[in-house]
Amino acid sequence: MPAEVNKGKCTGCESCVSECPSSAISMVNSKAQVNADACVDCGVCIDACPVEAISL
Image (cartoon, rainbow, N blue to C red; front, side, top):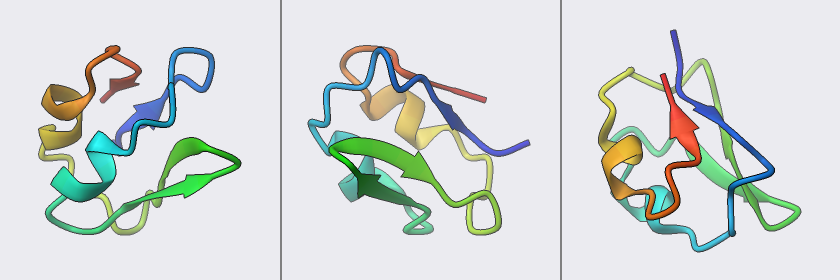
């Protein structure tokens, strides 16, 4: 199951974008968005998010 972003919590800091090893996260309308097909379910983005807006 790919990572999911809680758009209400996401502050648009882009920390997860640079940390994602599979480049599965991009910014859309200043919020993180996960490409489910590219996500490898590693959880790195969860640790990178300072506001806990990402979950698996």
